[in-house]
Amino acid sequence: MTLFRGTFLDTPQNPFTGGTLRVDTDAALLVEDGVITARGPYPDLRRAHPAEQIVDLTGGLVLPGFVDTHVHFPQIRAVGGMGMPLMEWLDKYALPEEAKMADVDYAAGVAAEFVRGLAAAGTTSALVFGAHYADAVDTLFTAASRVGLRITSGLVVSDRFLRPELLTTPERAHTESLALAQRWHGVGRNRYAVTPRFSLSCTDELLAACHTTLEEIPGALFTSHLNENEAEIATVAELFAGSDYLGTYDRHGLVDHRSVFAHNVHPTDVELKLLAETGATVAHCPTSNAVLGSGLFPLSRHLDHGVRVALGSDVGAGTGFSLLKEGLQAYFCQQLLGDHGRPLSAAHLLHLATTAGAEALGMSADVGDLSVGKRFDAQLLRPAEGSPLAVGITHAADAEDTLARVFTLGTPADVRAVWIDGELLNESSSKV
Image 1 (cartoon, rainbow, N blue to C red):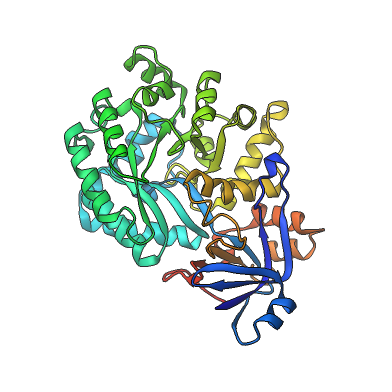
Image 2 (spheres, helix red, strand yellow):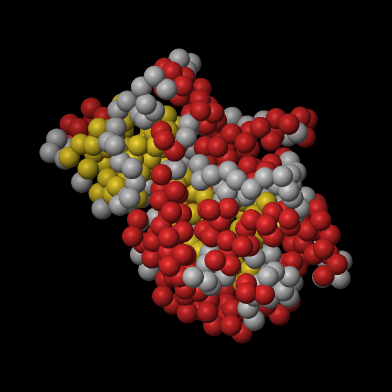
């Protein structure tokens, strides 16, 4: 057993429904076999467990590990493409990189960069858009297993619209997906996600095959894109005889509590009602929406309908792996919406980056906050002395103000250590 001593901040109760930021200073968590078995004032827990090893994290802030609900593994080297909307950006930046995943050595190099980037940003769990090539998806799961991340991912499938080398058939998509799931689903911390790229690039036959695959992999998730760009939405309607975007998935049984849809910037009320009724989640990707000019996310409409929302970094249209940056951009977005926006506090942002993501991925029994009974997935933020964040924290009025400054000024450079199941990640930049 190990006692972790420090200041702990988390959101076990949803701030959107009355919960508040939980803060314990000079506190301790007792961790046994990766599970938090006690939480309380440090002096009390030390008296009760005088012989246990102490990991002293004072002088920093301990947050739950972040949960990224939408990020593209093949696109890390495409980050920074500016000046164009979604479809042009895909053609110029993303899809050429996706095609390079056919080279397994290239894919392995990208996978190593990808998982290191997540870990360095304090992300311990992620729902990852894999690659269009099964061997490349293997490299991702291999790299994630080496580092220790909780990764849910799968083969990305399309059978139209994209460049020819990225296309598959319904039969091949089904066969290759099942083979990948057999190798990786439930092995270590890996899980499988059925992943059609988007309805624009998928026929009804392929989406039907996705449903078959999903039903044949117990515990798998489903993820795709939804209502990101107005031109994209119009084309989907043309391809599917006037259907709304969500309906193209729902007709094949792909909208339920296992489903995570990225973006949903331009939803209809009918779609929001269905998302709420089925328990599906929307991954809000604010920096990507800004870079591509997709629009301002209507968070209030989602919450008013009862739709679950979490955060995604959407690398590579997004601007990096840090969910601190995504949280800050989410705040900006709601401010810009004025009366149509939902004012966000620092507690809301932490919830979106942690507990909401854990709920979206069906992992809330194990991760998302630092309560007794949860796995110890955590990160230590300790800014360099004299840095703007360190100065800001020194002069913060209270814990909520401190957390607001973390989201405003924090970067991966401030993440000094990352744990999963109470163990330091193999390739995290630990400086404890």
